Every structure is written in C-alpha cells, then in structure tokens.
Amino acid sequence: MRRMFLLLPLVLGLAGCEVDWQGWAGMKRQPKALPYRENEFFADDRVMRQPPPGTVPRNRRGKEHLFLTGKDGPDGGYVDVIPLTLTLEVLQSGRHSFDIYCAACHGLLGDGASQVARNMGLRTPPSLLDLPPYPNGHYYEVISEGYGLMPAYAEKLSPEQRWAVVAYVRALQASQRARLEEVPPEARPLLQPKEGTP
Ligand code: HEC
Image (cartoon, rainbow, N blue to C red; front, side):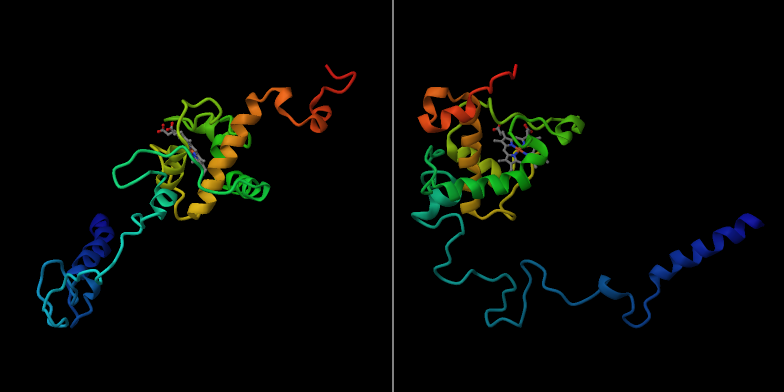
C-alpha cells in the first residue's frame, strides 16, 4: 500500500504530459515552417528560400580565398606563405592569442607540457615543436577547423589573428632550434650562460 502512495505522484505526472489545456501543451504543437512544405507567407508559396542573387559563400571570396582558407584555390592545396606582413606587433598578437587559447593544452612553449596534456588520456595534445614539416596553410586550417580531439577556433579568433598564431608557432619552433650565430650580435650576450651558472 505504501508503495502505491509513492507511485501516485509519478502516475499523475506522466498523465499530465498528455493533457492539452487548450494549447497549453505548449511548444510541441505550434505553427512552424518545415522544409519542402508550402507556405503562403511567401509569394512563390515555397517555404525554403533562395539566397539573394550574387551571394558569395564566405570561404570563396576570390583573392581572399587564400587568406580565409590557407589554400590556394577552390581545389588547391595548402599554401606555405603567411599572408601577413610579419612585424613585432603581429608576433605579439599571435603570442597573446596563443597564450590564451593554445597554451592550456600545448604548453606556453608549445612543447606539449601542460596540466591538460598530463590529464588527457585519449589523445594528448602533441608538442608543436617537432611536428612533420607541415605547410603554414595546414596550421591555419587546424586552428580554423579543429583537428581530431582539438576544438576549432574560428569563432574565437579572426582570420588575421589565426595567421598571427601560425606566425608565433613558427617563432616558437625556430626559438628551440636556432643557433647562436643566427641571433643578432648585440643580442648574443643575453643568451650566453652567466659565469658561475652550471
Ligand atoms: C583542449 C586542448 C587543445 C587546445 C586548447 C588546442 N589544441 Fe591543438 N591539439 C590538441 C590535441 C588533443 C591534438 C591532437 C589531436 C589528434 O591527433 O586527434 C592537437 C593537435 C594540434 C596540431 C597538430 C595537427 C597535426 O596535423 O598533427 C596543431 C598544429 C595544433 N594542435 C595547434 C594548436 C593551436 C595553434 C592551438 C590554439 C589556437 C591549439 N592547438 C589549441 C589539443 C588542443
């Protein structure tokens, strides 16, 4: 008997779903436009609308195609350029975005040393310092569209910011392999080990 009392609210609750208090059933039944149906609201009675004449898909903007996709043409492969004038500001902007959006997984140095990497069991974020020789367009695409378990960043970073991140990743890679002779002479003393340090 006690058990039946316990069940009573559940039974009443379930019954409630079927009650239609003159439209109170709510959003389950409401006028809406379904694909391929007729709709008198439009002059041609078609519910599915055509894009306005001259509409251009957002990743097919002629010359901008390369900038927006990292690829050369509609069927072309990745480009190996970075379509920005590389200045210190561009690299600093790339670093800013990288530290916010990438370092959590790939580490501040891009070497894959991060708490997330240590905790991620399925597929750990790789070190970005010893990847195969990918062209720059590939990096741009990975950032824009995501890769495997890695999320996409097209909503967070503008195309310009994404290219700046590519440039900064390149700078991180170079920084790990550069020889002292490649550094301008005036900056070399900064990189020499100080006397007395091991
Ligand atoms: C949530 C963690 C996470 C964040 C944040 C993240 N990544 Fe990744 N990234 C991964 C994982 C995991 C992989 C490997 C995915 C796989 O192989 O399935 C990966 C792979 C990559 C690769 C290698 C792709 C290849 O072709 O081998 C690059 C390059 C890369 N990430 C760059 C970035 C950049 C740049 C950012 C910041 C915009 C970023 N990642 C942010 C987790 C992350």
